[in-house]
Image (cartoon, rainbow, N blue to C red; front, side):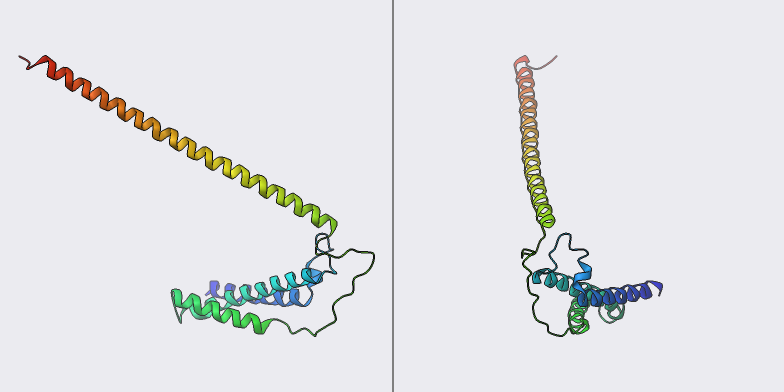
Length: 176
């Protein structure tokens, strides 16, 4: 029972936080360290993220209600469908406003200068990790092939010794 209450409480908290984040996307971005607050796409990304938080909250709260109704894959699909509908209806309705006008002092774009630098650092790190992973995979393949060759050589040595022993036993003749 406590688990069910915690699921419902966590789901409601996620829904409330998602609704707040949807209404105030610029507050979620912080002090615009990485994203340019004047860029529309930054607000769209934050709104999409907050809608995902509302979806997660409604899914968390619905798990408790639908667990007894349907189990297995049917219950999961029912939860996902109801959560998507609830997330759409629980998102706050915002009035339509005119798009912000860019000022001459700040260049357009989604990322600030610090954000662009951090993006390049992350891309370089991702490339370095990918290259290291590829090198490790090739090293693993090479070591696996070396083990296979070693086992094959060992097997051929054992077969050679067995044949040699068999031939020596045939040359001696019967023992008395």
